Amino acid sequence: MAPNHQEIRGVLHLARGRDNYNLTRIPPSPALAPYIERYWLVGWDLRGREPQVQENIPHPNVHLVIEQGRSEIVGVVTRRYTRILEGEGRVIGVKFHPGGFYPFLKKPITSLTDQTLPPAHLFGAAFNDLENAVLSGATHAEQVHHLERFLKAQQPDRAGVTDEVRLATEITHWIAAHPEVTKVDQIADHFAVSKRRLQRLFQKFVGIGPKWVIKKYRLHEALAQCETAPPNWTDLAYTLGYSDQAHFIKDFKALTGHTPTAYLRRNQHPRD
Image (cartoon, rainbow, N blue to C red):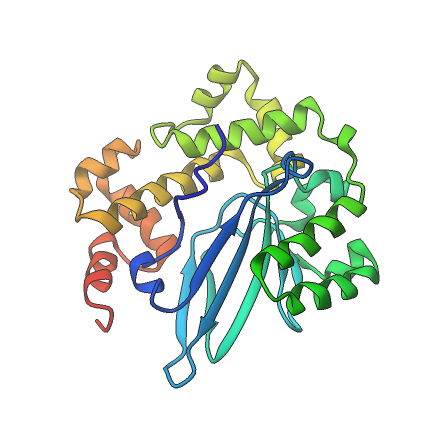
């Protein structure tokens, strides 16, 4: 199951963040859909306001990020990602499917985990023209058009989207859609693959192990519930497969920087 394009997951203090920036998400064309989950376009205008801290819990995806003077290919990030927004700016990004960047990179995605790569190192000097064209685009549609034309011209190896790549993508999306999944054994049983093969698939095509993916998507679910109503933390911990509330709190704090109750309090009272 592919992710819901209308649902935003993994953004800390989501409701508060909507006051700081505008986010637009656009699906790819059918030709690039095997590789790309979506394009995302973020703009902000904080002139006359204090800089704002924006934090995200990472997804198991590679991103191509285009920003004036800061464009980069970003591998899977295993820790909380923090960005300070100030003044006026915009960023245009490509979120590849788990496994979807492999036909471009043509080597294990673990080589990018917690790493960034200058796009010209992979795409050559032609990327500089793309960056100028995208950032000069007058509309979102025009910016995405430039990205689509460029990525199609890279001629990603369609044959490189093998059964193994498709399986890695399918499994990762399935984990995201089933927060009740708490163990790698459940994945292995559902897809009738060995745990060893799962590890190889994820290391090569996703860039991180399946256990990490399970944990992060469970915390995405916890954050989503925090945005709607104060949950019962004990019930939520058990629903997400934790043996006790203490282990849930430990994981939550390690990634968000706050205990669940402190996080919820900051959601309600941003200046606390």
